[in-house]
Length: 54
Image (cartoon, rainbow, N blue to C red; front, side):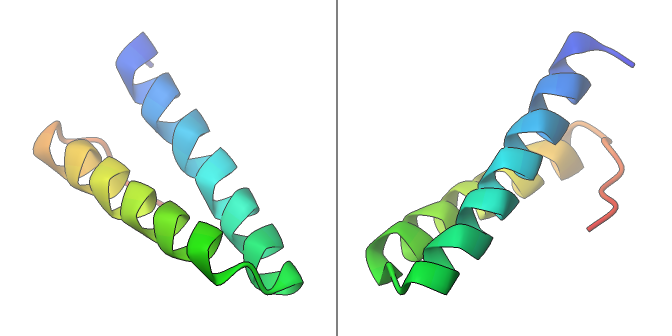
């Protein structure tokens, strides 16, 4: 696994965990921000052929 792939996967994992926490605390702004980050990271992954499990 390349460093780029590892970085994308790690950042997605962190963003999903942060999103869960933001939702559980009712932080709508942070949840929206993390959703946007997740969309960007997923788009990057697809553009570079990185398989996405979630």
